[in-house]
Image 1 (cartoon, helix red, strand yellow):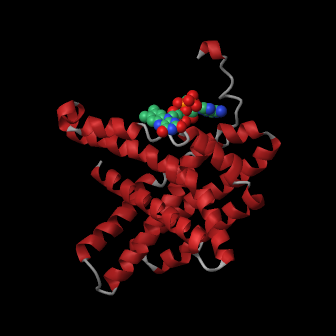
Image 2 (cartoon, protein in one colour; image 1 turned 135 degrees about the vertical axis):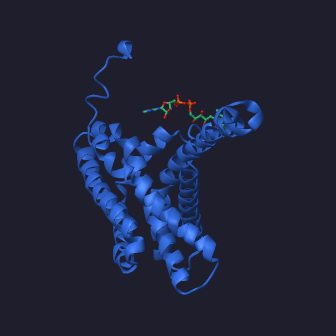
Image 3 (cartoon, protein in one colour; image 1 turned 90 degrees about the vertical axis):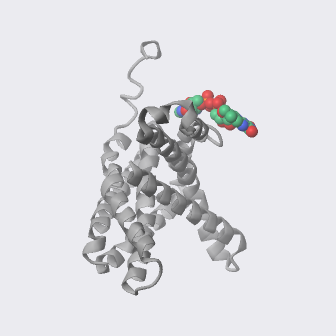
Length: 250
Ligand SMILES: Cc1cc2nc3c(=O)[nH]c(=O)nc-3n(C[C@H](O)[C@H](O)[C@H](O)COP(=O)(O)OP(=O)(O)OC[C@H]3O[C@@H](n4cnc5c(N)ncnc54)[C@H](O)[C@@H]3O)c2cc1C
């Protein structure tokens, strides 16, 4: 549970840092082309940063209660207040369901799909770097490659199906946002692992911190990232079953 919390927090921070960096560069980079690229990044990643990080904030706060058991549940521990406070974030500033529909309905079609395609190809460029990292980065590489392949297939399904019947694409929007977020998080954890390994190999920096960073990234890619591939059937199931039960039977 502690490792789940640690890895989720590090992944969330990484997504938010990348988003914040992109906002700065979109506003202030001297090259207008670079400003446009970064603005596209901001647009694409906003629903990820908002929705996934707030959902995971609830999960991390809930885990705190679980870690402390019965003591965690009662008010005196302070943990329930964190859980209640975090629970609002998926609701306001655009509910997470609306963020998911924004990702599918507005962000994927940006520039005819070129923005998301470019984003997925940036993630793919990490593969040879991970390969050079040897056995230590092996589990990161294999899990990221599997999840990225599944995400790319699912993305093309959503874009194609969205044009044929948008109800199919929108019915899968929430699991798709989660899948997209997990892969984005896996990519950024992989980048952190590469940086940590390079520093360790060079004998630079705080060894204990860097070893923990590397182990946390491996943990994330082995234990949390694989959920991305299992979400694919939910994304591509279509809307028929979702709408099959009449409202008065719900
Ligand atoms: C503590 C707090 C502070 C707030 N502060 C502010 C503030 O300062 N300023 C401000 O303007 N507002 C504020 N709000 C309001 C907040 O922005 C809204 O609660 C939020 O936008 C959600 O709207 P809603 O509550 O009407 O939920 P609804 O829109 O009714 O949504 C309920 C559920 O239905 C889902 N849903 C809605 N439409 C669809 C759809 N078309 N398809 C599929 N699912 C859908 C949603 O995702 C959600 O899960 C605050 C709310 C709270 C609780």
